[in-house]
Image (cartoon, rainbow, N blue to C red; front, top):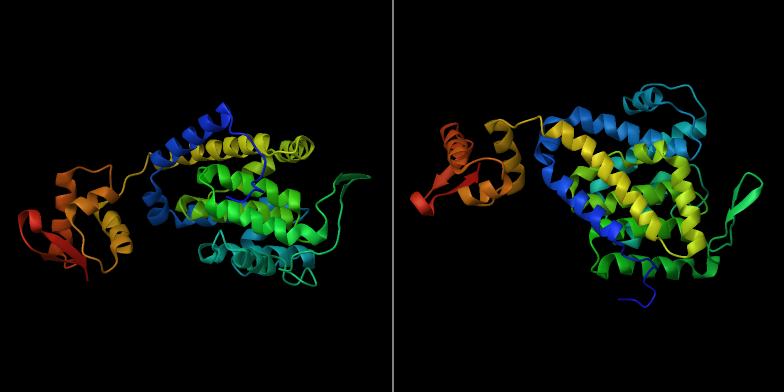
Length: 322
């Protein structure tokens, strides 16, 4: 690891929250969300974009953001409309971003701030200060060292052995502290935490973390300021893990009430296995909430309806999707 690992402590509260979040992630029927709820994905994506931009002063409502999603004409400040259009593009490309790539990170910023900054995606070399009201709220690091700090941060993200949940929070805070761009840093911090988590937990592609941050916006900025004063991100890690846990609790309440049909499971399996050969055991690993007889019935149904090709017999039986 780099000697410049971000400063923070792993507290009992952080360990407890990581455990709680992991437990909720295990409870959530992600297959249901991926297969059965495109409307939920879209609804949450709209909330995410509207909330994240409202935090930064965008005046458009949820209804107006939804209209832009539908490519309808919206009356509003040109800057606000461009911000929404750019955010929609970024979230549509969410799966293509590589969380540990500085280049990918800068490309996302370029899309997010296109038409709003002279040089979107370019790391700042100037010194800046963040002013709230009549006071200087934060003086970020000198512009001459920003690129080096970012490289250290991305190295930490890639190489450190801490749980990904913890590292995503550390990254979010450190990005706000470094303030690598002239504008859009708050949006990038929230976006990139989603990118980091989504690579391991696909549910975060439409988990509206920004919506919850919006509800606790004052506390969010208060915690950021507190961490600036203490020189470490410990309290921010605790705060963000708490936000994530609370939102997962809400979503798990939705998904636990839903069940998949055999066709739903087979559609998901086709996406997972593609043209690879798999066994009933492999199928059961992907659908832990069904019994072995149910898996057998699913696969028999798939064979009878010519969805899969069956080879072998008894223990040597295997399948592949057409």
